[in-house]
Length: 283
Image: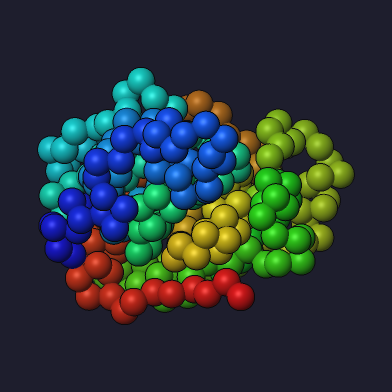
């Protein structure tokens, strides 16, 4: 990956409030708004975003990234924070939930990255699910509702195959195994007590549940941004003793988060230098 990429944004680094300069009565388009809002939401100028992006919803991941590469974190007082290393790889902490991941994937049209990888945690939905196991989802069920603002419900939420293939190779280089399957994405919280919902999850045969993946895939598809997700199983909510607690989440972070982050960094760094061009068309 060329270190020059981070400073060669196709939209330029010096965008300055074109919304206010366009004159009275001008209605800005999506791109104008995104160019104005991406720096406002992240505290980072557009020209500092790299061609490849890691998304996370954990401040600990972003801090570890910044510490490893000795790069500054922008946006300490904004809704999202971001950092870019010397190789032009950017990491963004976008927060939690489908609305937030839709927002950042919309705002990224201001930069149009070549690939985005989401590093998230998920709940395993099989009794055999193993905490610490990685999942490369082949699809996601759109149970969150946010994605309906982009495409009709029958449009599947899918990753970009070439990006996932590259991530798969990096996992195997570490001598690790992973699982594939369908992830169920929901906006609900505190659903673990709901027996009817648990029965529904069993009927749809999903391997895991989270709050972002389906929205991330759909909005990436809408904006024609190549995307993939590497999920870490952090709990097994189908078992009473498997419901996430503060203590169990601290254990998962301590034991597995660094490896999760490193695989993401390696995948998105090497794909810039070695990977094929990724293009997922929206017809």
